[in-house]
Length: 189
Ligand SMILES: C[S@@+](CC[C@H](N)C(=O)[O-])C[C@H]1O[C@@H](n2cnc3c(N)ncnc32)[C@H](O)[C@@H]1O
Image 1: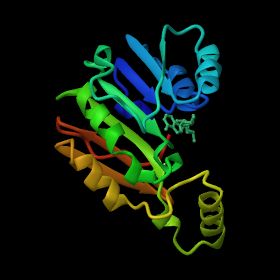
Image 2 (image 1 turned 90 degrees about the horizontal axis):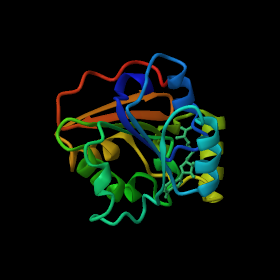
Image 3 (image 1 turned 90 degrees about the vertical axis):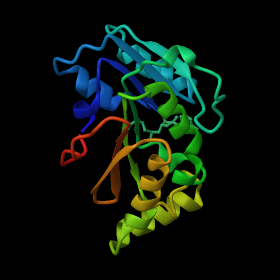
Image 4 (image 1 turned 180 degrees about the vertical axis):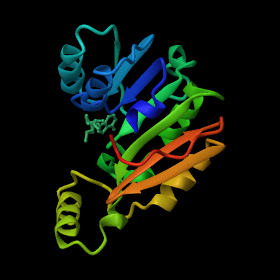
């Protein structure tokens, strides 16, 4: 999925260790502009080292407090990814309005915002996944107890005309844009 939506001018929000980016960079994708963003300085430094041969910019950003007047230099970005980020926020999807507003502003009419999140309500009947989900929410590692795909669709639709939601187990995949979108491809990677 990551490769299907990533364009030449790309921003990865909550980049972590840069796992998806690294995999994509093993293909023939050559970004014209690449920005990695994360709240954690350690993650940015680590991923920046891993990307050392690829020109890129780093941005320390907390998606819970984005100044709406900031980051005008990012306007014109063509794709923005947020993979496995929303479930880490204190109230999961309910905490992500600022992020979606930000993505919509910088992407404009043609760009695509896409990613994945673990949704608590999709834990289903499997004892193991339910138990891990409950434990992680109790430890405040995840904040996704009440998250579900409909809530994510509603959030994305507040700022984007087109929105696609898919599922792979407990993982909800999404893509949103003001331009027409293809259906989500199957699978996560
Ligand atoms: C589970 S990791 C996902 C990393 C990567 N996107 C991936 O899929 O492999 C979540 C990342 O989001 C970052 N993060 C958590 N809360 C954040 C926030 N409020 N603002 C920005 N980044 C945040 C963490 O530092 C971490 O790097």
